[in-house]
Length: 116
Image (cartoon, rainbow, N blue to C red; front, side, top):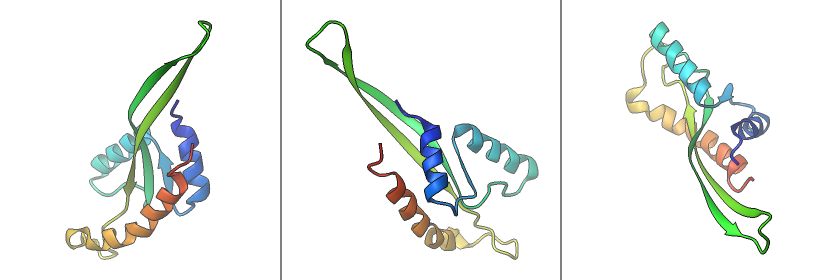
């Protein structure tokens, strides 16, 4: 079964540059803060682990006492990065953010891809 807390702990330990790692509740809180303050309220950079879908495939065992299931969990990782410059101006088309987020995206992928 998918355990968001385990994934968040792994990201926190292995990608220390993330200022916040959380799930859907933390993402919602950051969005609410941003709306209330009318400014960027996400710690930057941050990552939010979102469950997308879980499915189970039942595999019958040779005994009637138990059933073995394979569970597949699909998750999304939302990376948040502040795209406001030091002068308070939003960067053109987020170009700078796209460049800045690539190494972070790679670190997150290396940390999580293939991990069970």
